[in-house]
Length: 417
Length: 160
Image (cartoon, rainbow over the protein chains, first blue to last red):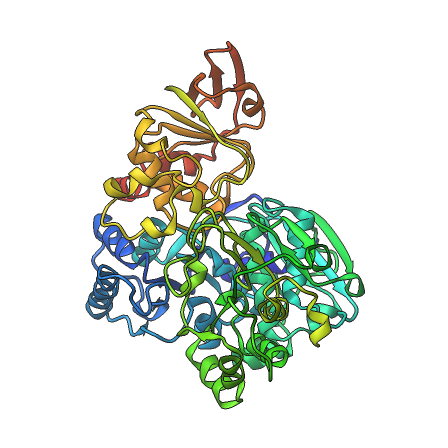
């Protein structure tokens, strides 16, 4: 009997020769990530559990991103507590203003294919894009990992999404994942592994693949994995020959297989206030918007800024419309600046925010008030996510958001491409 | 045995609705709990009584990993959350802080606001006392039940 990619990663970690969906087992944690919002709580629970030393300081990464730069007087307390704990426990990987955690973990190679990784954030699923088993947990469980290096998991069944063919113009991985979410629903993957494959996925950049895995959690999934290939090995700086086991077997058993023809995909939008409330962009043409947001761990990478610049070059965003742009990391920001992309965005009227979570988690950088409507590239459009519960959030690809900012209303991005 | 009055919510109640992110930095759960369910029902926190039970539809607790979501419910004295299904992280977080989470598909349509439920988590039974109807719920795996019975992961680890 064959195994899925997710099962193979778990087998690699536990050195077991077989695993079955539903089985509870302990995994040895390869790396953990804690961001600034939850760092003080992890530290507090770690102490309450009676631990004195972390199991391995080199496997712990702290990323300050939700509260960077600080917006309120109280924010700094989180950084101070995390800094003190890192110093006490000899944790060297502390990123104080380098970008969003889920971008940094793969970018800085804290996560490589085949690893089992946990983070105190639901979008930890992002690293499935490079063939790791990675998912979000709460701070109490993270404190237990800090002390023991282990965590129990339930082996998930897998839903496989096979997408073949060439994507039409103006359609991106964001449109793929939004359509899948619309098809299976916001709980369609609860407790399951999603696996994305097929020639379309093979053709995507690592950045685009990260968008898919990032939003796997929006279907409730535990992980969202993609088989690592030459692109992955180059990105992660590893020797591919060491990871040949990380492939789903042809006779692997899936709970369900979904087949898609890439040519049938269109630009789509998730309407307020659920990620699975999907509509073709064509059905929303003319919907007035007040603010665009391009950024986040979902779509704040170089290629996202690049496509926005392509659409905005030499043009101005609509009067009374705001466009917030937040690169996902410092290195992406620097690269985009060197390539002239930042200049184009700023000249078009964009407000550049520092590389951090910012508006996506509703804490800073463009908070919206009653009646305002946002179109955004991030992963959640929940009620009140970016400020007032009386505002509305639409989710779309960077191209669709950039085009909407130009006209102050939802338009078909393909006319600008 | 858990017994309490029902507060009924819909499907896909996400963690931003349970406790919006702008309140996550308040210094403690006592200050945070007054904002529980604020986007859905501004009066919830001031009218809920210790012992009350939350009943939700599918995918209760979806969204972020914030442990404060089950924590504010526990701090308000909620004795259990019963739902058709739970989001994974919320479910684990609830167990880890010792808040009973009960999966039952059938009870949802047979319960109204303010009904009284009796729940036996160990046996996997739920009774709607008001309507005199009985239901069975999914039993938790032994390891998970042990954590819940120890009052959460801290109690469980300290016992070990």
